[in-house]
Length: 258
Ligand SMILES: NC(=O)c1ccc[n+]([C@@H]2O[C@H](COP(=O)([O-])OP(=O)(O)OC[C@H]3O[C@@H](n4cnc5c(N)ncnc54)[C@H](OP(=O)(O)O)[C@@H]3O)[C@@H](O)[C@H]2O)c1
Image 1: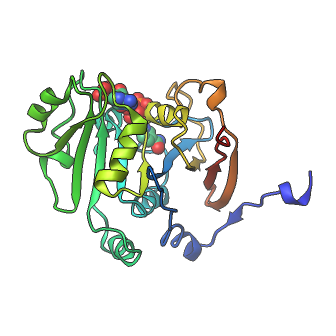
Image 2: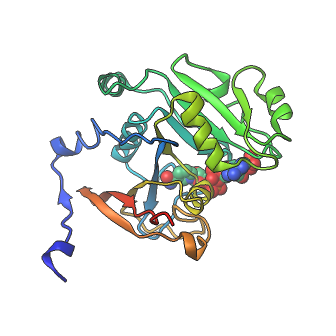
Image 3: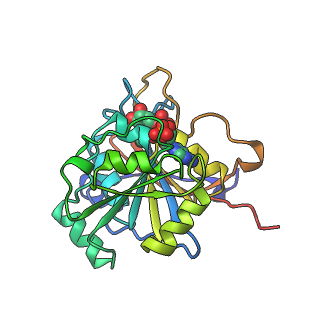
């Protein structure tokens, strides 16, 4: 192994840990948003405990989740993740201030993706107690859109993108074209991550490795096996450690066109 292949994990002091990803800047995408996934996983590759991601990552991991989110115009979430847990999207004042300093909009677009056969959890704060800074958007199929408009009852726009399911490449182009989304953070779950990776739509992977062995059957950051032609190598961009937890950032090596 050459010296170049050795990556040392930097173990951070309290002060350094408090600043991780504070002013993170993501590249902008040109025909679709630059897209990163963000996941916390235990050492044995579990992303949920009793059906919820709560308790996988530390308090610092949750803070970093919000900081990565703050580096993008929009967040994308699979409907099952919203069904599984209440997700607080509101930014703390310091995170919002840093977001504005970087020229990002005050509003965060929260995009929920659903085929529409199973009801959405409209009791979630995202829909039930809307904030002017958090703008929900439901992407679904042509078939399911009328039923979802009824469920959302004016609390979210509903856009059809595809006949039966959502056409993900077109959905990302639409977010870029019509909603000004240049950077997108995908917060899972594992099934949505797998679909986006299969379509070659992920540019970076943020992965927290939490120092726990949990057992169980929840998938890792990708549910199921990716088709061989879409399995991609990753380049490690940074590896930071704090109190046994690792915060890893990788870039996906895309296949050269042609
Ligand atoms: N540890 C972590 O970082 C983390 C992060 C996120 C989630 N999680 C955990 O992961 C679990 C949920 O993940 P999951 O993999 O089961 O589900 P998921 O990826 O959150 O959501 C899958 C759902 O998204 C919708 N969807 C995805 N692709 C679609 C497409 N192309 N067209 C239309 N709809 C589409 C469908 O919703 P419909 O069923 O409505 O059609 C599908 O059932 C929960 O336990 C959650 O706690 C953990």
